[in-house]
Image 1: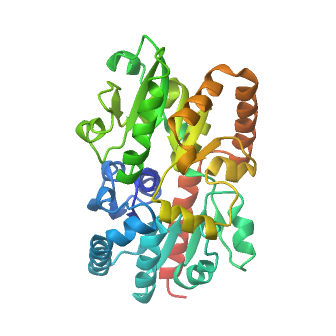
Image 2: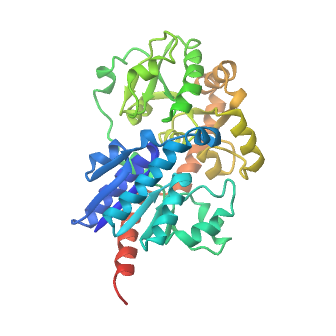
Image 3: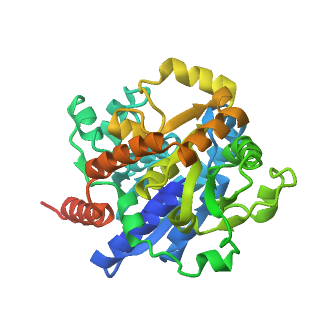
Length: 374
């Protein structure tokens, strides 16, 4: 069958790659075309557009980049119409993908939404639109099933694909030697995968590094950028920037400072003590605080429904506060033990690997059934 996938950021590229791999295992004739990234491209198929030119963060950035966003959307719709896939698989990225779903539904395509949009966070009435334009919705967070049930919507809970990615990870035994990281304990810096995240968060992370001279601060580079891009935010500091090795960095890390997003959950699954940080346009944050219907911004705390990871947002994300929180993670045993106990509870709630395989199986099953005449 022909599968068209749309992912618009780094986490979607990771989940899309694992899903493509699972689909190939169940459908030897599978043919793929997609908006995505390097990981998806490595699994085979045709990469139409890289997510690096699509990922804009927040209302203001979206408004300022409306022309390229609309151009990308038009290109995606046209490519889908020309290729005529058997099924369209949308991965998170709701601002873009819900528009694509609406178009595809009018074209009579089967629309599967892999990784439910986070409509439970704000503007919950979008559920009614999703019911009309999405054939099958796959959820990866335990509490999402009950949320959609309130709207009389049946969804499939498949577990979390991050568990697949972490389970498949095999540490590079030569990682430390290859990157000259054998002398000091490592602090992982994960400043995000979007330009806006990196530009706002990395300078604060670099300032914190100067207060911990006995540690090696290592930046996990996003594949959409290069060393030169990161160096402009280092203010002369010589911090290692390592690409395509985030899990190896986390595997060796004593602690981490992490941009709020999927990476916070990944860091927790590696049992690395962390502090989560978030900075965005102030107008966007002020608006979000008016409409958000959630107590926390990180998936770890949302899944647990209690604070496990400290969240430093906007003005709280500063050198002084970050230095204090990192010091607690490194030197306060009771503080650290509480976090580890909550991580243990998180692992229990998350369940076991297998989300990608289950999603692939359901996508194939639904597509075959709905394309077969009654």
